[in-house]
Every structure is written in structure tokens, then in C-alpha cells.
Length: 62
Image (cartoon, rainbow, N blue to C red; front, side, top):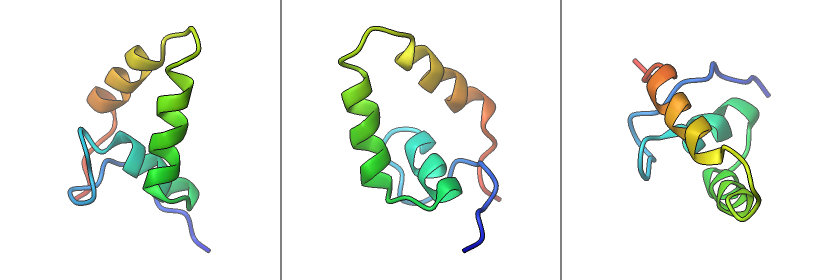
């Protein structure tokens, strides 16, 4: 299995495509990454800031 580069997809996105891009990069289902992100939001930490930073920094798929 070949991993793709880390980029936000143009399709299969819910908000910004960050979770879908991470899922594609690591060969996971997007729903799995979204659920893990939502569960991590129950813990203290900068999850939303990291999501916003990835939204701004990750390139969009060509």
C-alpha cells in the first residue's frame, strides 16, 4: 500500500478536509479519523488550534 502526500482533498470533506487528508495519508477511513478527533476534543489541549493550523498550512489536492 502506497501512502499519498499530506494534502486536503477536494472531495470527501466535511469542513476543511483536514481529517480526510490525514486519513488518506495514513491509509485510514476518514470516519475513523473524524471520530478520533472528536473524542480527543473531550481532553484538554489545543486540538482546535492544531486543526485550524492544518487547515491553513496543508495544501489542497491538485
